[in-house]
Image (cartoon, rainbow, N blue to C red):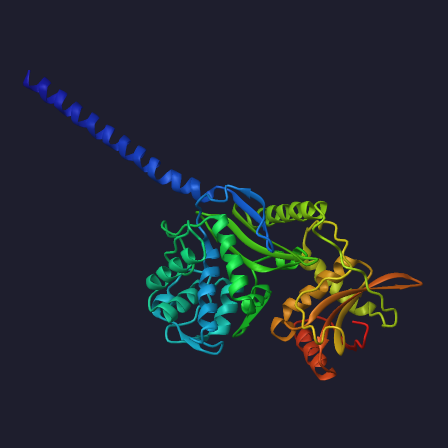
Length: 423
């Protein structure tokens, strides 16, 4: 009888242990699964960048992990420091052991080495370097934890009500959350408050030391009108992207979270932007500018072929939508946009290729070309229509030749031309 009682007691203990194990598994599934599901859920939003009108949204207030989109706020804080004179573009920032120890992607600077503010900006925009994000955080905030608190406070101030930052890089942290709506709010605020620095987001290549780093934002080269702003990825979030596009003077700002791959994310972003532009066109909000003719310029078929080959390699499998504008304007300096010297980066039989060529050239050397006007001019001749891709607004031949030399160093063909009154 005693043996039987002992056996029943042992059975009860085993049953209790099994039940406890099952309960533990159930609790883990309950606690962890929703966070993973929330983070990987597809969310998206598109707004009219000029009016703020929402053109598309899907779960725009659903909390997700920002991943490297976090670096947009890191850059926002750095631009603020620049604007208030706390740092300059040449200010050196030291690399700590903690910064050096960050997970890739990173530049890999050693503890004790320094990087300038300008190079830090370009490293964050292009390489999305996690070690440099920490360098910025420690330089401005003392510690990354303190800097993350500063980021969150600023996020609240500009209207990002559902965003919390725990680090400066976007590396995995369960407490670091945002929404598509908040990310668009941040992009709008950045352009509004620190527009003088926004051109950095259009940088396609960053040369540092003996290496050149490309921008992860593929839309800069593959979607006409894109001029920023950033991508992000961690396993918990999927592939994310905030993009700003300006076509025919109409700007759209969009966010996509939860892509399965970079390509599917990019394709989805292009679809949303195409639909938004089509809606604006149907509503009569996009008015194509008048074409301009100047038949006295020479055509450069050799340069055109070089740029066509370059653009074809960049565009990959893009299927562009229809564009019917004759002229596209990037940045304007009114007093010089219609006279003086220009540089021509090619002449094309296809209008879209001309538009892409001139914008790609402008992004290749933004510091040199940021005060110029990008224009596509149509020329008719006995052999058909040719579109000339030009950057206008240089104050003299010397400035135009210097800019052309900068482009040639980046393997972009160009020649300086006297624009006269044909601009």
